[in-house]
Length: 365
Image (cartoon, rainbow, N blue to C red):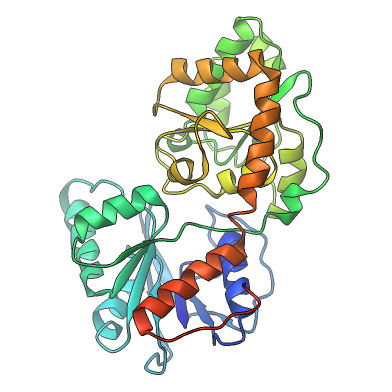
């Protein structure tokens, strides 16, 4: 079984490691590049089944187009899984390999097409997914999107799964006073940081005792902070970008987690927050929110871009400390369902459906 992915992201590597532990799976993973400036994870040694393909990429706005070479032969593979359609390498593999070996595309919900030449290019590249034997959608929202676009293909729901053990250790008693609200991600408009800052400012100006902890790349944060009153800034802490190994420490400092993104195909930080036993509040533009949050139980969803709605949800938790405690327990219960081993089992089931081959994977079970 061969995976082609963009780069060695920690959450995908957790899944690949679990698949590699299955004795009946001969796993190979190829990455199109070793690292990316937008995701500056510390480089770690590759596993024997992981390889970096030679090549380069071209940037066009926020899009990156990869071109790689020295493709190994996949004619002996039972299944090839491709992650990311907006690059030339995946396009070549889809249009050349899909006729020889069953290919699965694994991706998040597609964003709306751009205008002009770029929009036409996106439509052309997306059309190549018709060559896939099946599509593994990352989350329920993505599954619905692909079912509309490709009604004749099997569509499976296989979200991201990551190792949460470090997040679930040494958890504090919650809630504390003051309640600490955590955001983890890039400080950019797409992540809705401005929405969170406005809602938090409303809480502070209304007399609530709360803190806001921001973790992630600075990006647009200085401009966003300029308009906040001193009283609000006094209750805010910016901890900067943190490596994956340091993140559990910051999640332990929090009592609530908020991801107010205008758009997030998935949002692995939601997995991490649930693993940390945090109530999670997401906009309905976050893919993970629709699969991992049960509104009113382990968190809540609010309408995308609605500052007032977010402020009201936050106030409901600040006014009811017991709500934080019960939601925390339900998040920890949910965390047991989203381990990499569970994700690996889902992939094994898909492989069986497409190839007809029984895979006895005792380690996963």
